Picture (tube, rainbow, N blue to C red):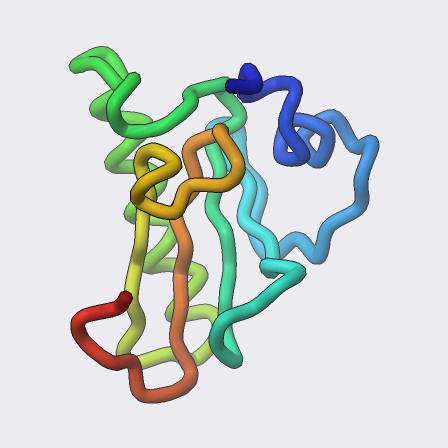
Length: 115
């Protein structure tokens, strides 16, 4: 498994790959997904290299809370009144980039269960 800094998200954080950024602060950035699954599909990623929730510790609590608050902020910024947040942890759950990220998905009716 790649280290978070070796992933495409690490390259985005270092400015090696451009992204359509919608938010940036000291703890995270948010940008539009290049393969959107809905009219609005934004990824919120921490600047800190964290693989997934399984690797998070109690020391990451403030960061994790911040990521969710930013997810809500960017959803509202995009004019969404309803949206889904998704965090995949591990390959079997659908995680393909091993750098923690929060999907913010909306702009169309979303089905349940998701998949």
